[in-house]
Length: 383
Image 1 (cartoon, rainbow, N blue to C red):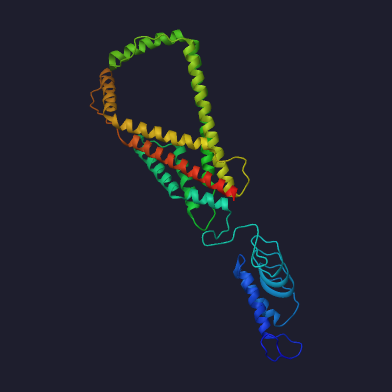
Image 2 (cartoon, helix red, strand yellow):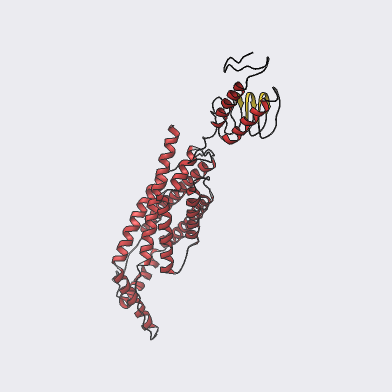
């Protein structure tokens, strides 16, 4: 008999080699269009070799091919069957894997691997990576670190909160900046812990100041008499221009308590909403549903606080000479009263206000990073 496709004479009841090659090429094309195509490609080659020697078989290996049967491996090629592996392609069948191809390599569940997303991360995860690993995030990290370093040289002291924030910033940026790995949540967890601690300290500060104001409201007469003595002493010895006496009533301290309470509630709400935003970003990285979203309020407050801090730093730098004069005058009087023969001149340093300004700039850039991430996540919701 003769092959109807190529015209070659072949024995009766046999399949022409040209048809076997065509089937192998078709299987290989379908498999290479699926995720993890290397496994499927090997399955197609093995399947073509198996078809030369058998018509029906079962193979439970990592890469195999068959005409009619079952395969439970990772990557395989087959004409009609079932595949429960991770990445595979088939002409007609079912695939229940994580990233799989069916009927020309289509798959469900995870993004298709590519040069920019080889780990098959979700669109929302990629949005978080791009935001936290962006140039704006790098600028915020550099400016905040530099600001803290300058503050250390100014006061020779370092806050544990500042250290934790610096560690968290660089952990977050470094993990998000890696192009072939998912972002990590360790830095965001540090931020969340710092914010909880700041909320606790703010509550304690509120209670302490409120208690002092409450005591002053109960005994205004004693406060007025003590003030007269203190103002007379400061005016005579340190040339302070203070009123000789005051007449403060309990109502003044009640108003102060109300104002202080409003400020404390505002601050606690700011830290709480900022923490919920951090928690929301952490949930996006972990691929978990989040009950909270990135709030606009703390980001706007970061920008406003940054602008105010920059203005305060500029004013402080402009008045360094006046600050030095006041401090030197006080020190001179103290040395005279203590009969200490010592010459000491204080010079206000620019390092402190410069550090504050750099930290403020970092706050502004951080706010823009979070606002940009919020916009990107909203776009992914619409898609």
